[in-house]
Length: 107
Image 1 (spheres, rainbow, N blue to C red):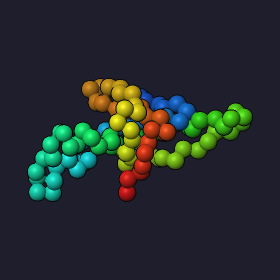
Image 2 (image 1 turned 135 degrees about the vertical axis):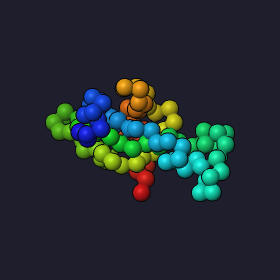
Image 3 (image 1 turned 30 degrees about the horizontal axis):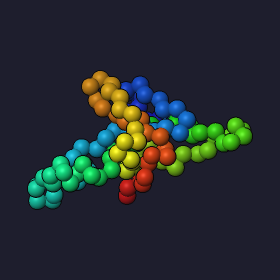
């Protein structure tokens, strides 16, 4: 578990991931010249965030071994717009995302 996850006290279970949502600047909704891209454009994009904690993985069908996770702490990911649960800890927003809702790893 990462230091960020320990700090906020979130431990994801099974194949879930804790993600810190990226700001508009981090996501690129502001152009290089400082022009802000309208909400109507940015709302159509999937969500993006940084992985701060990863569960141990789900069990295989036989229940004998865990299936390893494809993401790791520090990855920047794109995930389904409605594929998460939002939690707030100490006024900071985090998303708990099932690995199946993660669409891509950025970078």
